[in-house]
Image 1 (cartoon, protein in one colour):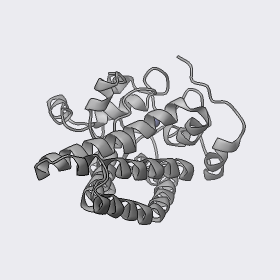
Image 2 (cartoon, protein in one colour):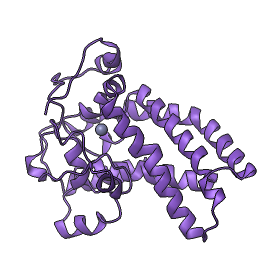
Image 3 (tube, protein in one colour):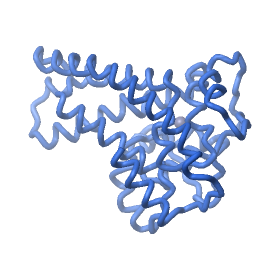
Length: 252
Ligand SMILES: [Zn+2]
């Protein structure tokens, strides 16, 4: 909530796109989906704590098999949790059609701002929680590291969705370490190949390594999806979309 408030204020002062929208009514469905994400995550928190504690106690998982200085272990743990718990599930949601239909809710936002970060269908929140649990078990991450990862992930996702205009040199400098709004905006362009690019959550290098990185100038970006043209989506429509029996094929 702190991150959301902070970026909400900053994007009001230095927006990159001057949206012709009512910021508060735009945020309402996004806050609803943020709340459902929080509920799913609270339910999974129990399994994640149990999984992490069990992995550490039994010496299971990549981080428990290698012996590294603490700072390297934290960095490696953050990178692996980001790869498995965020990049991989996000990429999968774009490639598997029934999962894509859940993820469309996130991409259907035509005014991407900080409130869009956790606009996830509860079904998608469930996939993400399952992948996070799997990532915790594979890495054997201790609970402190999982908490650091989860809170960084939420705040940095709000940052990279925020409608903030940063000087190019600032964006390029911090873009060496974390995903910036300029990078993630490309992912919210309405058509391919941009929609299927820049999946990164915290770290920018996974997209470069797996060749899913694209560049596009922010002023040329049109938010939304060319395969989904309901301008005024109601909550009920969005919640039911994964079950409507239609195909939302993406065109290049
Ligand atoms: Zn996406």
